[in-house]
Amino acid sequence: MVYLQTNAIWYGDVLSSMILSCDLSKDEAMDRASKMSRFIEAKKSDKPVRWKDVMERKQLFDESYDDEQAGDLLRDNCKEVRSVELNGGFLFGGPDGSKYAHQPSLNVSTANDAAMKWNRPSVTVLCKFAGSHRCKIEGHKDTTERLAQMQDIMKDVFLREEIKKWNSHESKKSKDLLDKAVELLGKK
Image (tube, rainbow, N blue to C red; front, side, top):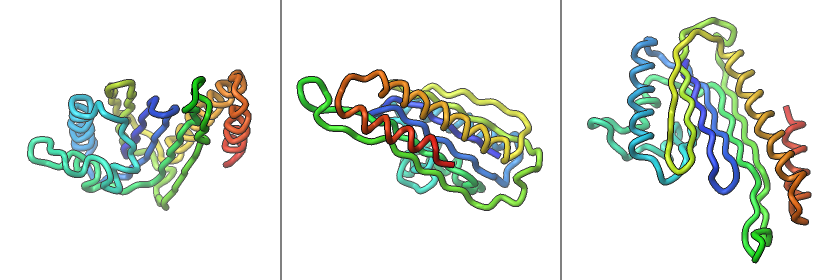
């Protein structure tokens, strides 16, 4: 299994997380994750990587890493099990930046994984984007079920931070953003 997560600030805060089930050895998965991370750190400073876009070939589909397409390092022999994409709210325009509001949004998709409860080798890739990428890779054993719980914990932490942010914001438009974050936190 491969667990991917990117935290970023990009027109509001961003959380992109995905669990992949791969037909690879742990060493091969670790090697591919390392290559991908080095490529992202070196070449992708324009915007954060969203893992759903990588798997759907909207990102990292035409860039090469040693004559391989960068995204194919993850796409080959792997299938998506669960994806969480969160975009935080943000205000922009006008003299105080609050003329327009962009609401927080959440997209969760889950595919069937027959081995949800099996303890399997797993590789975790955690990337932070703040003008450039910094990624950390760890290898361990885990179940898809526990990784999905970790995704849910990260989602809830993200939304609580959004609530705190918009609760203390003085703009009139922040009430709508606060309400949307509270609504998303309540969704399971």
